[in-house]
Length: 442
Image (cartoon, rainbow, N blue to C red; front, side, top):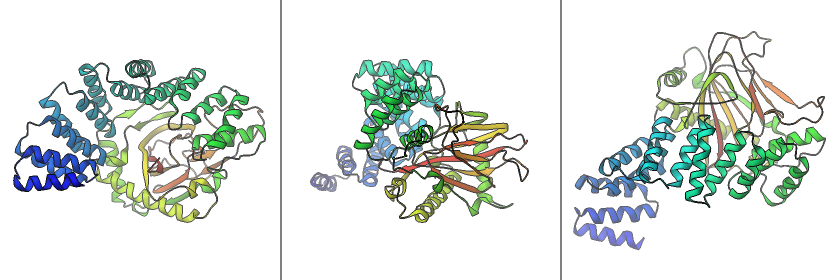
């Protein structure tokens, strides 16, 4: 704070001194006074627009604040002044990725690598996009190059483990998760052991996890629940052991009825916006958007995000006081870990799966195919089995529950429940926006 005071005093003596403006902006940013920092940097650029680092630092602030279009403009200006600025190309790639412009992000990361072949984060993030697009063959060498440049790079270790995990090379993935030791690496190692029927190793690792870690992993909760049914044991993981009791269906008034301008605008933006689509192996006869839909600039998506937040607050209030970590440990501050649209055509369906990194999963339904009253086609189902988890006895009954839907409905449910879409044969399109919510600090 003393530095800020001194730079303010210096600026009073010479308000047109761009160097002082930059120093003051930097000091303000270090103290998280972002608005003041932005004003200083913008004024400095107005006085002298040939300042590459100022554009870059201003872009970094906008990126942190989620102002992705402004951030992209700043990085583009920095690169126009210094085309070999690898960090600006890298952060422009990050910005494009957040906006769902994956091909532009790929080009940015490739440019950063051309400028600095040993830039490990660019290799890592390029690998992530290639993996996101289903191109694991090209993704893995980028993780390996990131680790060649930076052998202790935990993110690249974790992502290499994930790529092998998606290749179903579970034995090879486990050591990388163990080396990385970040985020949910332990949960993913448990998954690998369970999927390969290493049940003794799974139980040994699980017991250590139960003793040492908070019960905050939806993926571990899924595994423990499946194991409990599979082997007739107790579900002693406290994230949300009675998960079916926490499936809540309601409606959003602004999306219901024959006249619903927000619903119409959402459908229009989904069909017309420039949003890249991603590969999704579990999705059949449909497409899924990339990026984080609720953080895009379209007003319709931002309006729906606020309505979803309101519904989540209702959800928490409804279950307040219940004895499970999902409710007890979810703070007031939340974020959308991810959000995307799914459009399905005739024959469309989604295989049973979970979202490992959210706490609450959900979907809002904007268009549904016609179905008979007694038909399950196009409906939503949650359960305790999916993803080809090993079943020890073919007669074992894994519980499941069907949710019948109407346009305008929202369904919120614990992320440790498998969920799927029942195939449908009607001609109408099925359109929903799905999302994962998690505590903002996690």
